Image 1 (cartoon, one colour):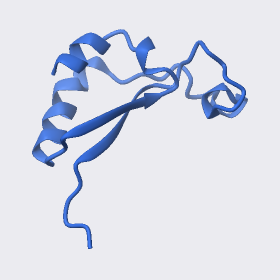
Image 2 (cartoon, rainbow, N blue to C red):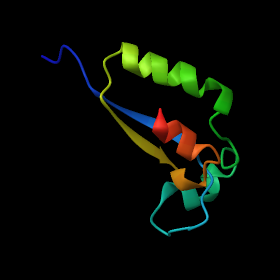
Image 3 (cartoon, one colour):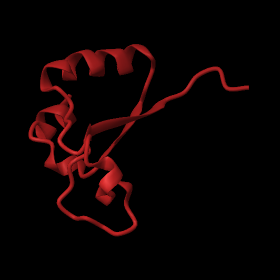
Image 4 (cartoon, rainbow, N blue to C red):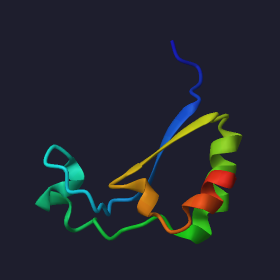
Length: 77
């Protein structure tokens, strides 16, 4: 039985500039969410929530997480 977890996936954006043929982000099905991004004003709250849950590792996902404009500040937290 799992009593706790220490890993979370955090989607920063579904936007991507690669358009890999195998990736869901390149699909036309994702067109409606492609321009959605994590609200930078929510970053501190999300970090605090993950910390309070005991999360020790965060995997940044999306389309292409490096396109997120506030990536450096987020990673420093």
